[in-house]
Figure 1 (tube, rainbow, N blue to C red):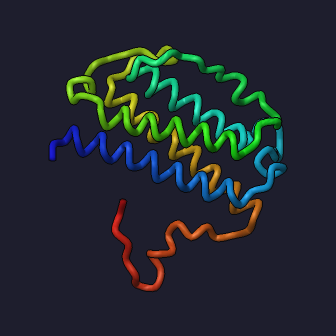
Figure 2: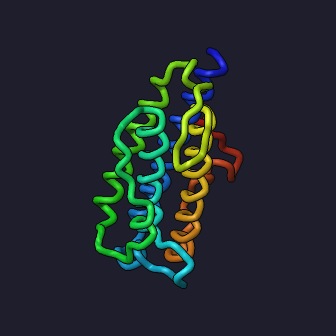
Length: 169
């Protein structure tokens, strides 16, 4: 195992793991909860689903993979409803699956190549790192909102209680 292979595999695995957590959360929410905002300066879960899809698509599939950049970032935050959670989740899942494949297939030399996305110049490694940390940050927002709306413990770390252990993915 090389350092490069460890980085790309862990990054792809982490995106897939976080996507699974988002799906768990969204399954517990009503359509009204998906689009609920407590104030205008907050984003609804629906906005975050659209935003994550746009971000991963722009930074990985466009920035590293060369796909067309068709993102409308302002629309991700302007939406106040309309899109169904099932459709947004399916689109985000497809994007994350495609991005995970693209990350795993990226030749090691491309990790050091510099490119420009959203006006930021980054290496391939920097773009992947940005996407994973960005995806994680918004996933944790979705987890918090889900806990607030449902009052449930989502059980993501239940294996840490009671002395049982679980292998990391």
